[in-house]
Image 1 (cartoon, rainbow, N blue to C red):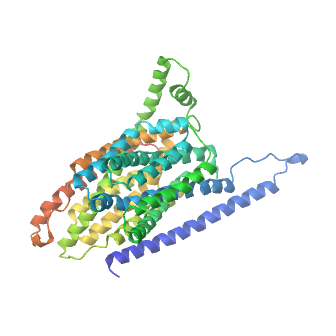
Image 2: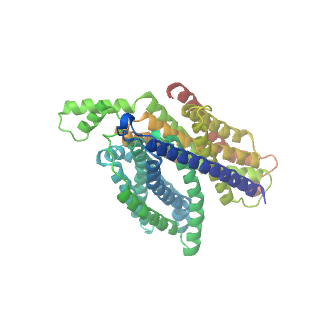
Image 3: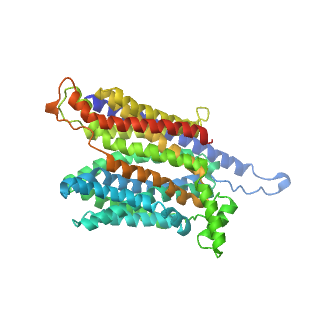
Length: 494
């Protein structure tokens, strides 16, 4: 086994052992809840022969019912998304023979659509229902996938715009529905904690990412076209729509834990019979919610971390190529195994998040988020100073480990800071800075490694010229993340 295969095997073994340990812990917790419920029933007779009060507290069965209707949909939705990701660029560039600048415009169109739609999709979801918004996502993303079957450039651009709209819905309405439903069912009293749900979500996403890449490649090999994974995505979204329509209950923006004055304000703003002054007053109340220091802190964190993550996705391949060539190695890198290792590192991060948050003695979620951001900053910065291929790979694994802890930590913090009444709307607004960040990055990004292997010399001068831009990007992202770490420490509360 070579270096990358050994690392992938190590991730598989470590993750497998942690999954098994978590499974045993969950089973013990479920058994303990059942025993407590059984004892309460047997010992519940009141004094003097009076009947016992009926215990309406949530049980392990209600928690299991909730996970049984949410996680299958989550897996199918993210499976549909992961099936598309590895093939969309090569579909446009290699199969449809589109010029590089057209491909860049297609991607930019998707992010612009995401930024623009973030202004209103959350409000519409809060008003007309998050369940309906999730069904809308399935329909919109299916149309986006169908667009790649055409060679008409207008249809392709329309498909990317629909894809951007769908991405905004995916990152806002599903999580908004889940958190509100969790609060309405009062599941906090069970062993199913909100933090553990976010941890499981990222763990499942990591597993699905690896499987979707393998399945997508098989479909491409069978059919001879990169359109096949997009059709497979539709096949994932169809059963997801069925489960949502049949099993999910609806929740709106005026329900849950939002304060009463905000609920009333939202009703008036989104269709209540009131005069213009009242509407303006209630719009101001919602605006104040959006500019809350904690919400702004989460917005800044999302913009810088997720923007850095996107640039990492763009640059990790040429960075490893550069280190590989620096070691005078001219063989092809096993990018499939490397990608699987990154997903293994992300999965490990998500399980570490669950373990750390379960044991409150380690650190709070805010402290964990701050640590993750600072650690990600350090991992990107170190890649500038350490040129070894293996060290670079390990540093990238550390960054992916941080990604695995970041998303559940961010989801948990948003769940605490944002009220149920305006959850989807605020979640949508938080994606606007990120989309703008990505659009700007797309317009400025250059290829990270310009030198040809045959031009390389021992002095590495030519290669360093090609690497300078990428190193500047990593240093800039590192600095931004360091600033974000300080802001989280000051303005975000436990």
